[in-house]
Length: 177
Image 1 (cartoon, rainbow, N blue to C red):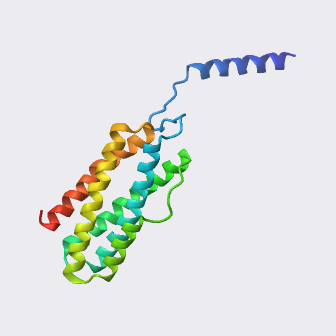
Image 2 (image 1 turned 135 degrees about the vertical axis):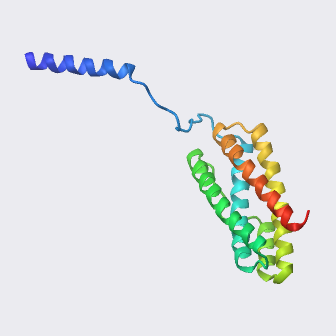
Image 3 (image 1 turned 45 degrees about the vertical axis):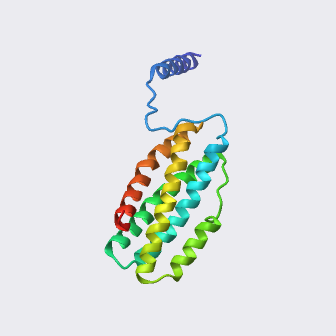
């Protein structure tokens, strides 16, 4: 009987200590209770497709670019869009958003053109195509930041925005305008 009372007292003391223990939630992503809006889902899908297309184009630029600048931009696109796509894929999975398995038809068309291009034609088409795709990505990212409803998706869009702008600046500089 005495052992049981001692056990109950120790358990009560332990529980009382837990009530005042600080909880460190820094670095823990907030959980959203509502499903992501159509805009949130569209941003995740569009950015995912853009990531896939830009990784492909970047790899081509690393191998086919005729200048160090084009090769360097290609590597930057591969590295940055691979990292971003890992985050997009993980978030979409947590939120239950199905992502497409391949780039859009227009993105595939550009990829096919880049595969066929050589020399300066490749460089020009790569820079023009990637500039156009980054302008579109920045536009939809701004829309997500301004009007998105999922705190997690908006936070990822805010994280991606400066990187997309950095890419666009490098592309425009290399393209001469």
